[in-house]
Length: 109
Image 1 (cartoon, rainbow, N blue to C red):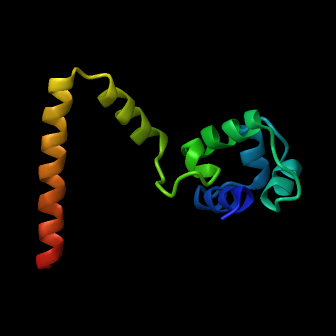
Image 2 (image 1 turned 180 degrees about the vertical axis):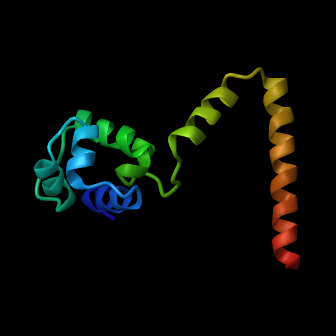
């Protein structure tokens, strides 16, 4: 998927018009339309503003990853990364157990 296609898909998912997203990203709706059609490439500053406005990671927006992380999930990961190693290990054990239980429930459903 191109950058323009990502912007279009995410904008529509948030039910924003091009003008609304343009205002949130400090650009114009007309220029945003050109980005969506891949007619022009936005500057890195504009791409950052668009990612922030769409509340999505920059990596996902530009197609570097298929993992769609919203800003809330990213903030949680930042907080986890700042924990002492022992607390991180405990948290990972809990998450691993929850994931294992979830997968087991899916398998038996």
